[in-house]
Structure formats: C-alpha cells, structure tokens
Length: 296
Image (tube, rainbow, N blue to C red):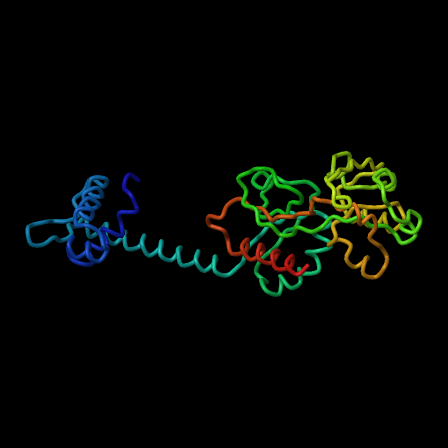
C-alpha cells in the first residue's frame, strides 16, 4: 500500500462537506493543507478522485468506489479505538508481577483478596524473586525491587522507606544486656541479609557517625528467614521495622542496641517500563501497592 491512511479522514470530510473550503472549516485546517492531502492521496493512488471546476467538485467513478472503502476503513478504525478505550478504562487482562519474598508474604498477600474483589477481570501472575529482574527480557509488567535502584530507563514509584532495627529474642536480649560497643554487637550477629553483610553500614552512635561491617556466618536474601532464626535465639538480627511489627508488639522479639541507629532505611519501589500507554490493569495494581504500603 503506497497511500497514507491518515489522509482518509480529510478525503472523507471533503466528500461529506462538498468541497475543500467547507472541509477545511470543519477540520480547522488551512485550505492549502486540505488541498495538499487530497493531491497527495490522488498521486499515491494514481487515480483522480474528484472532478474539479471553479465552483464545485464531485467524485469521479473511481472516487466513489474508493469512498465506499474509505468509509468502511474509518468505521473499523473508530470501532477499534472505542474498543481499546473501553479496555483501557476497565481493568482487565493478564498482569505479570515480580515481588521479593518478604514483601509478598508480609505486605501483599493479606490484601490480594481485596484487589480481586475490586478488579475481578484482572488475571495476576505473581512470581517471587529474591533479585532484581529484567522487566523486558522476563516479560514482567511490574516488579517491586528493594534497596537503592540502579540508574535505568525504568519508571520507579517509591513504596516504603522504613527504619532498619536490631532485634533479638527476649532471652538473648537479657543475655547481652545493654550493648554499648560495636564489637559486642558484631559478634552477636550470626545471620544477616546478604546486602548488609560484609559491607560498611553507616550508623549514628550517641550523636556521632560511625560504621559497622557485619561478618555473619549465615547470609540470605530472605528477611523472613532471619526473623524466624532470631526467634529461635540465633543472636541479634537486623530487620526492617515493618517486617517485625507484630513480633515486637506481642513480645516475641524486642528491640536492642538502640544506640546504634542505622542511617540507611529499608526501601522498596515498584518499577515498570514506561509511562506511555500504561494499561489500566498496570495502573490500578501500582495504586493498590501504594495504598497498602501507605497503611504500614
């Protein structure tokens, strides 16, 4: 096909309004632009669509045949546009989401029933990944990533930024008592998230900045494993405060070493590939994540 489909609405307007001047007024285009579109279409089709004189223009036989086809094409375009607008307005279809383990179990899972009640036509496929994913290569629509995000072309929506705190089983807390030096604290940490192990962590101790480099014997990508292990008296653990709220509230865990305040927060963001042409299902799931994280 050598002709431009974008010329069809102009061609149809000239036919429907009986001339270039009337069509130009309707389309709010200069007469010269309308004439140029019609001339280009005739040249591309290699046929004359209109018979012209100084006072009027009418369709040729070939023009009448082409106009019938043009009407069908424009109707199909309008129908497709209306259908796509309808799909975009009502969230539906398939959505692939990647979540970290702890975030999925401790934050998202208890709210999925509510999401399904609101958007029953969205089919959600959730994968649990301990590491960042390749959204395009892995065909992921939305991924929640923890920690600082590397520079990328992805769009990032901040979801949480909560304190990292030192916690322990009450019996362990009594055993260590008031932790007042870095070496004692370091010796008490036996399990740690890999991102925090063997890397300097900035802290504030009694108003002064310092750092601690943990050397835990066990490292993992799963904060839930750390929490479970700490409840089994495996020393002192470093956890995001939002992941141990219930245990702190009911006394299964207690906060320790409060004088050693981590300057880094536990962060999580929702990332996706582009703001352009964002589907309704993607948009509502991001809003859902923002809503439940705001309640933490």
